[in-house]
Length: 139
Picture (cartoon, rainbow, N blue to C red):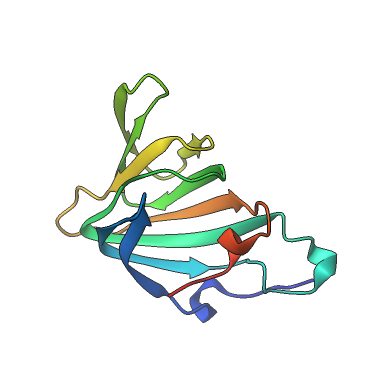
């Protein structure tokens, strides 16, 4: 068993997101990789990773997609989640503590913190796919 405190996991500031060969600015966002491919031995199978996101005031993760699915659960603050369905229709929803969002594989999505002063904090669980390199923390 692995048991740790979230505060003991070093936050990594996310400054850019690479999507379709281009770099996009990520604003005021930090990620803690609570579980990942390099934590524990093979007995953990590493089929999922759990990440802890903090999106500061007016922070933003721009529109992107990826092969893996993700489920995120809002812990504190409020956020605006934006997604585009397969027909290109854009949907925006405000999420607050206790809400969850489930993004399917290759669904375009983004997150914004509309607050001038409050943090938006959420957990995000992702599938570790193929060689599971999407579940290795990167700076």
